Length: 461
Image (cartoon, rainbow, N blue to C red; front, top):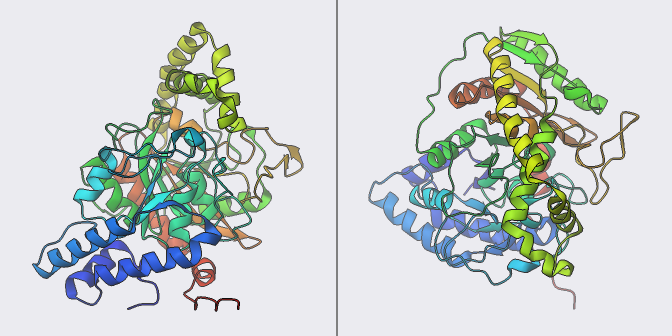
């Protein structure tokens, strides 16, 4: 067996299974062993479903022996703890949800199960997925796989850590305001947010319902493509990318950005130009997104979780603050935000009629130490809430597909760039991202070497 078959692209892994070069049972045991060894440091998983994973691996091995194939047959897939996995607790990062076991899979999980996935466990989230970091009251925050003393971002931080530390091949995440792309950027992975409404999660957890979608955290764009095709129950044909007109904005909305991040996104813009695309530096019309996003998200929280204020001591400070702010909202403010939502989407649609794609930073900084959100960025005061990550939510509001690609590093930490296309143009975005990914040639060696297999330490006598 390869030292870590979890680093193989999905198509290579399933081809190796089909040839008999690898066996899903052996790979699953490798996953479970690595979780036992490394997860105490990275804290990606909140629940390990070893019996389920072994059952699914044995079934996959039997199906391969009979010549069957399926897109994820025998592939280890971590499940974000915002999705229902049958007979497993859905904890949602909250003390208030302990002991709530799902009776059945929600829609996204059901599709991944049908595609042959092996599911080793559920990954950590902030409480009710309401933070762009991964802290909650259940224990220490999940660690960034490049440096566990730093945040992996959120809310799909556990999913990112599970892939980045080699504890799953790919992770199921969800993105309501950047919750896939932020952890992808901080953790050096590909994170894909499909067009809103494309990937349903029937019978699932409700939050940010105007903006959220299921999606993958992966090593490669092609791996992300495979999972998204399963979630969307459609296909996105791989094709060569014709020359495109791309809007490039290194500081969207005039927000401060770390100089190393600016240099990285400028380098990506130069690469796209070298690939033959017309890259135009310009402002992007995303002003006003927060006046829409904030009220509609808070209205959702109030509707779904107002009753939890009866036991405020069980809630994180950020969830308490959200619910109390939601109580102050008026119906007129919510109605105004909903009206503005349509106007905002039409404005971005119009912009993407003139441009085929948008290139921005994914986040404004590299991953920061736990509980130390930056107060200043490049010498400017940073927004108290959005400072490090103001560039993803606008495209949830716009409902467009968006992807984060690892594009460079600063001080040993990864930097992501974000590509966006118009609503419904997911295939175009994946193909453009794959061409840029190939040209970038991001080096995963540092993080993979960090979590290379090593002997279990001898017990202290």
